[in-house]
Length: 340
Image 1: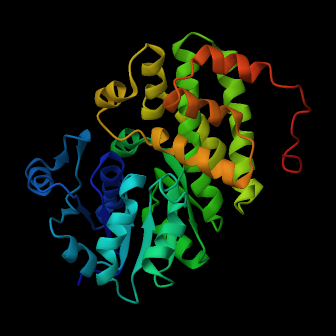
Image 2 (image 1 turned 180 degrees about the vertical axis):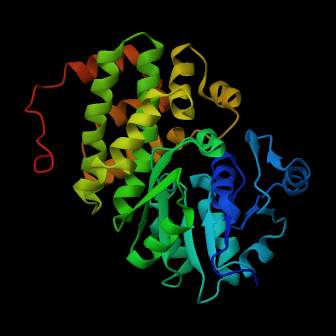
């Protein structure tokens, strides 16, 4: 067995690859497993993931592991980094081989489509009360992490000791990790911000300007917080890296796939056409449908997210959505953290 401090990253997309690189810096050892059959040999030969994170060279201590069973068996800590729609399936692959000493974390963002469950609830359904659980989230772009640019993010776990251990394992002089015990808040922030990034992409794409963009971000933060509190999150979480921080990043920089989806739709392209151009999963498209259902179930008012859902799935025009948002009845502005 490898050292107990070693970690296996399961999922070799752009973000999984970037995290595996970060975990291997400074002589630390980590492994990276990807589902595609041709991925491991290609990455090992090139010492880079040219498909998803071109130009980010692998540290010598990053091991490419083609065998999922060996990745599980040889590491105590497992970090799952796959799209939300694949999260349950990967956990089901892991479950039969888990030991009592395993610890599981993930950097997956979004509600499960069919059930409306957050990732930690999916994990408990599949894995029971077994391993300690943690989620990684925050304002991060894979390309910048791959380059080693200064970055900060959040790790939330129900066990503070696990959160501290994971934060220490990932952090170095250019990557800083803060800890939290609010899994719900961190997960809700990671899901809802992607919908709001589509909204700001749409707005900017049709020329509505900076005033509209910041209005969407500010009021979107209120919507995100409303939903999180309804599900049991702490208000304060949404003022931090995994809430406001991730929201602002995703809504304002064109590295964001979700923002680019909005920009593409504003040009008159179809949703599938834009997704093909982006070439990777656009989580906000899935999140819009899931959050629509969860908000209705919980009785939470989320007008911006609701109109993004209608634009994506009910052919509503952006102009009509904007008019409806701007002509809603006037009200006092919420005074966080007390009045939502």
